[in-house]
Image (cartoon, rainbow, N blue to C red; front, side, top):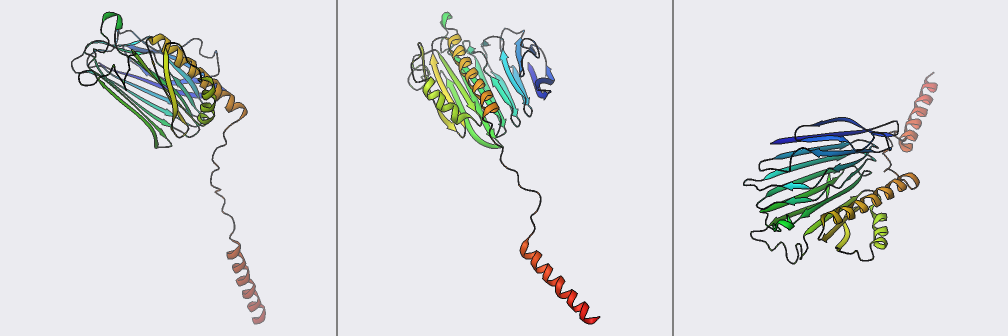
Length: 302
């Protein structure tokens, strides 16, 4: 089944509003609470399906226009059912000048023999901000299906002003990779990825160096600068809900940090080229001299 979700967000009278949207079965897009309970827009993606089935193809298009702000939520864990050919999810995001998107979906839970590819392509303006996360589970652990999926492939590509600044390409194949061992899940059952990209990422990195200096029970993580004004955090744990809460906490911290900076320490935009041409003094002097000589000749002739 092919499904599509289109989201277009604009700013009107200090509020971010859903300008245009489209969704088809089994998905539904609705407001997360009251539409204007806050300045930013909050939307939630809901589904009447028990999960993603073999052959499903979901396309999500998100366009956050100039100065608009949105938090996008999901309803529940994304369950991947047994498959023969596989399923695909394509997410395309466009963030215009001074816009903000916060999107941390619930964990992906692959059933035995599931095959899934998720491709995320994000186009940003230099002044826009992205708060992004995803969580992969090893499977239905309490049904003894941990690491029994066939293949999981996630690829996130981030562009700023049309230039590639970051790519995270991860392929997990249980048939020929030791995905539960060293350099993969390393004995854990869940893996989380968090990305914060925008004009204040350098300052947020300094804050996280202090905030995340201690240890968190049942979570192992590390974070670093992974590109220009972009932070990447990778975490491992045994509980999808715990990692989801952890990423949500990080996302809210980055959101509040961004709001504070935009209000009290705005990033100046790059000065545009002065379209008014400055007079060329050398040419002007030469022209004045020629005009003076011409005038003298006319007076002599008279």
